[in-house]
Length: 83
Image (cartoon, rainbow, N blue to C red):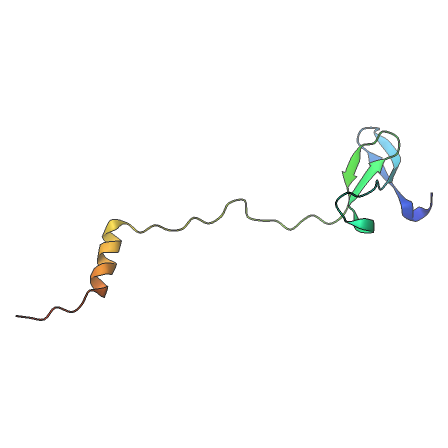
């Protein structure tokens, strides 16, 4: 096992420093796969930058009240011609 094939981390299951190696990546990351597995117990960890944060909810569209809709409609109405 070469130095590029493994890293030494503290395994939370073993509670001690252990050798971690990359299992075959099924997600298509290749050598950049963030998943590493403890060679003693198999506990997996992700090593790398945290993913970019995404908003947890989408902004809701603002609904107009009937009064606002009525006012907007009057602004667009044709001009009245005095009789």
